[in-house]
Length: 203
Image (cartoon, rainbow, N blue to C red; front, side, top):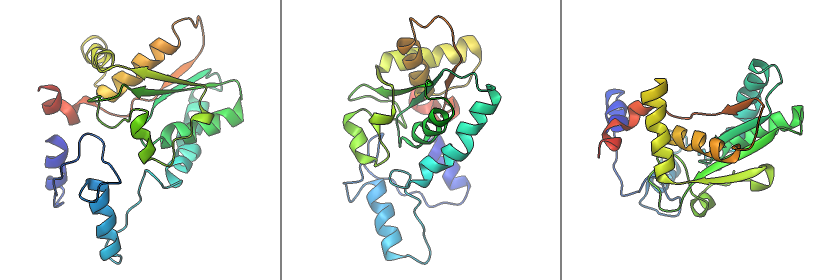
């Protein structure tokens, strides 16, 4: 509801469809299908960046996120952890960091099947993105709904970090993957905040 109201406040016409948490590009009546048909039928008025197929998604993180992390950690980063959604963040950032130091570990975190974590995709759901490149990751870590939401609540209540559930998933994955690591510089990407999901979390 928060997202829909923000869009309406900005002047957008909101078309509600029957998609679940993650839009299916193979469903003509879903969000991605409607967006593609809108662009096709009205090409002079609309443009669809298509974050699931556009290599610029990866390139943006290669040019910005990766260099920012490298600079802010002064090159001391040892592990990079991100969730799998469109896979642009982990693809671009991971590529940049590996070019700087091939020993940096790139850890990809994904939810369990039949999850209810907004913005991320399980392994089976990742067929919808052309940017999923598991050969570039050093580890794939699965996180359950409970693990993600428990960490999400702890981040908010104990650390006053207003992180959403996909951020909780990323940190839960990092803790699981790196439980035996004694030292290092770990960077986790928190892709969301909790304010967009308050009504969803209250259910």
